[in-house]
Structures are given as C-alpha cells and as structure tokens.
Image 1 (cartoon, one colour):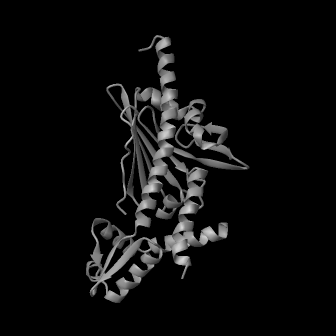
Image 2 (cartoon, chains in turn green, cyan):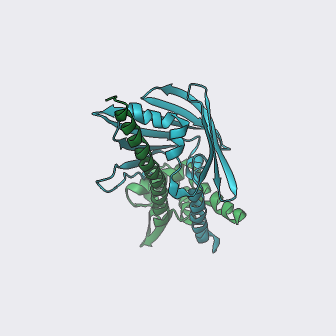
Image 3 (cartoon, rainbow over the protein chains, first blue to last red):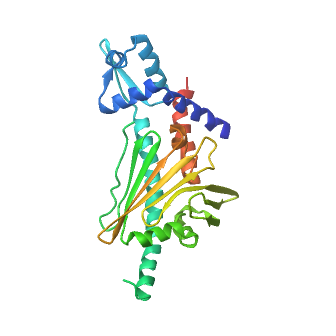
Length: 118
Length: 169
C-alpha cells in the first residue's frame, strides 16, 4: 500500500514539478484557455504545450474539451478541490490549536488578576 | 496555484485564517484576546505550550516537550500516535520577548522549515501571525514537517484518488 501511494505521489508531483505546467495551472486558475493561447502565452510550440497539458490532464489537474477545432483547457476539479481541502485541514488544525491556546491564555489572565497585576 | 482562503468561522469564535502565500509559504493568523506578554508566555513555556500545541481531538499523546527558548536553543517534542512515536525538533533562531519568535523544524528529510511567529498587540488583543517557509513546494504539500498523522493519511487518500485516474489506461 505504501508503495502504491508512493507511485501516485510521484505521478502528481511529477505533473507539478515543471515550472511551465505550474504556470499553466495558474493561468487556468484565472480563465479557461485554448492550447493555442497557452502555447503563445508561454512562448512554446503547439506540440510542446500539448505535451504539458497531457501530463496535467493525466494527473487530473486539468481537463480539456474539444469544440470544433479548438481544444479548451480548464482546471480539473480534482486539483482545485484537493488543494482547498488541504488548506482547510491545515486551518482546522490551527483553529483547534488556537482554541486551546485561548483556554491557556484565559487562565494566565485570571492568575495575573488574582495576583493583583493589571 | 492561487488557492488561498480565509476562514469563515462563526462570528462568536475568533477567526483562524490560512493563506498560501507562495508555493513554499503558509501563513496562519488569529487574534487572541489577551496582551502579547501573556500570549508570548504560552508560546515559550513548555508546561503551557504542551497544553495547547496538540489539539485534544487529534488523538496524539505528547510524551515529552523540551524547549530551551533562547537564540540557538533547541526544542524537542515527542508524540505517540497509536503504536508509533514521532519527534519534532529544531533550533530557535530569534527570540524577541512579546513580539517575535523564529525557529527551524529540522525533522524533515528534505531541508529545514522556518517558522516565524509575530505577536502584535493592539488594544489589549494580540494578532498572531504564524509564517511557515518550507524548503520546497514538495515539502509543504507532503506536510513532511509539522503535519499531523491525519493529514498524512488524508494525503495518501488524496494521492490514491489522483492516481486512480491515471492508472486505468
């Protein structure tokens, strides 16, 4: 199982290991775009951009749809949801921590008051 | 990716905000209803720190917590989770009473994460800003430093579901 996960780990990080692909995700975060537009934006050949988009698509980070002669790319739901979920888990950890910190600090306040300090 | 979000806690509770500033940085904010002096104390005295750093709901037992809070001093926290133990340790780089703490997290395999905490007092309340700078994007994503086992378990699930779409070809 650990091995299994490691493979997936590598696959998804592989997709994100390239600066252009990260740039493409960022770009698609702002608006959907055609492969042609992305190729122009990143100063690449159409073939080169198709390869990058293919890698992102395989990792579930981007989805594409062909309408007529234009292939439009958008962020895969998976990528966005999981990033958001990750951040939310992190936030929950800190919120829980801070709730307990509040309790400790309230106690310090009470002690200080009892000791006559303002 | 420009995915950052602020918390939407209930208005009665203090709000915890998290923002991913860059691919290597996470920033957490929270206002505590007490002067910085007391909040700082809760961050720098081991017997206080150990009471809040590990939320009770996380099923972790803090076996030991040693903190030598001065520049160059070390800290070490040992946890038990089910059958395994984990250690988190590092060095304090800056200790400015009531306003700023900087430490490293050195337990990760791929470099040090640097945590900077600032305590900003205003009208009897303290704004806490916790800034984590990870050695790499991968370190941040994998939560290799400072993460709780739950986060790692969920990461496994995440990766399994990511992989399942590429596996079926």
